[in-house]
Image (spheres, helix red, strand yellow):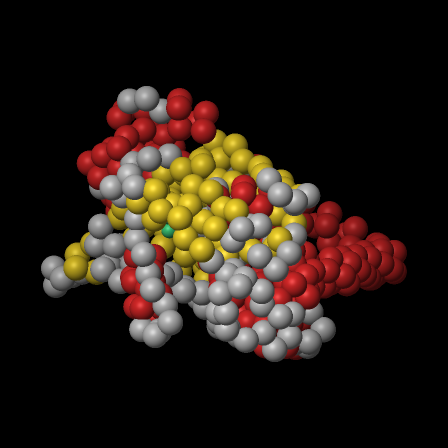
Length: 402
Ligand SMILES: Cc1cc2nc3c(=O)[nH]c(=O)nc-3n(C[C@H](O)[C@H](O)[C@H](O)COP(=O)(O)OP(=O)(O)OC[C@H]3O[C@@H](n4cnc5c(N)ncnc54)[C@H](O)[C@@H]3O)c2cc1C
C-alpha cells in the first residue's frame, strides 16, 4: 500500500495521501500465513523442538524450572538454561519476573475498542471477482473520535476494522441503528461491505480492547528476558507492533554476537558473559520500545483526526518537498519509522527538532508574504482601492441588473 486513501463526506470522496515522496510502500500481510512461515522456518532448524498446547503456569528463575499445564490437564516440569518469554501482552513470564525483581511496569487501556468487518470482492465489468477498492491503498474513513479502516487481502477481500469508543459500540443496539450510523458516517462503505454482511459481522464479531504495555528492564539477571508484546505491547495505529518484535530479535542477535555469547547448552544454567549482554540489551531497547508505544498512540490521533486538517496537510506537503530536495535535512516521521532502521527513540528526537525547523520555515514564509503584501499595499494603495472599488461596483451592477 503506497498511500492512505482518505474517504471524506457522505459521498465518500477519496483523497490519496502518499506514505513517502519516493514511492515506498507498506505491506498488508496475512497473519495466519506469516505464522505458518515462521513455524516452518523454526521447525527446519535441527536444534529446535516445538511443543504445542503447553501453557506456562509458573517459572522458578533460581532453580531454572518451568511448570506447564498440558492440554490433557497434566502438569509437566521442565529444567531450562535460559528463558525467552515471547508470550504476548499478558505475558506469564513477565508476571513471574515481576515477582522476583523491581521491574517497572506500566499498562494503559484506551477508551477505543475495535470490531472487524469483512468486505467481499466486487465484480468487474466482465463479471470476474476484483477488489472492491483500490488495493494499493490503506483506506481510512477518519471521523475525529472514531474511524473505519480497510486493508486488502490476497483473496481480493478487504478486512475492515471499526475503531470507536466502547460507549458508541454499546449505543448501537439494533440493525436499524447500525444502518443509520453507517449511512451517517461511512455511507460509501455500505454497498461495498453489503448490508447483510455488515449486520452479521457487527453483531457477531468480538470487540477487541487496545492496550499499551511498557516494562523496564526487559531481563532478569542472566536467567530470563521478554521480547515482543510481552515487553512492549502498543496500540496498532503505526502498524509496528510485530515489526518491533522482529527488531528485538535483530538487536538481541547483534548484542549476543558482540559479547561472543555461544549458543552452548551446558546444562548447569551458566552462560558466560550473558548478564552483561542482557544489561546492554535492556539499556538499548527499553527506550526504543517506549518510544514506539508513544508514537503508536500519536498515530491514532493522526489517522482519525489530523489527516482531515488543512494545516496538517500543508505542513506534510512542505515537509515532503524539503525531504525530496534535501533528503538528509528533513526526513518525515513516517519515513523514519516505517522505511528506515533509525531507532524509534532517535526518530522521535529528530522529529521534534525537525518540527521546530518546519515551524520556523512556515512562520518565515507567512511573515515574508505578509510583509510583501503590506509594502505593496501601501505603495499601490490608490490603485488597489480603485481596483477593489471597481470590482465591488461591477458585482453590485450584476446583481441589481439580474
Ligand atoms: C487490532 C490489531 C491490529 C494490529 N495490526 C498490526 C499491524 O498492522 N502491524 C504490526 O506489526 N502489528 C500489528 N498488531 C500487533 C501485533 O499483532 C503484535 O505486536 C504481535 O502479534 C506480537 O507478537 P508476539 O509474538 O510478541 O505476541 P503474540 O502474537 O501475542 O503471541 C504470544 C504467544 O504466546 C502464547 N502464550 C501466551 N501466554 C502463554 C502461556 N502462559 N504459556 C504458553 N504460551 C503462551 C500465545 O498463545 C501466543 O501464541 C496489531 C494488533 C492488534 C490487536
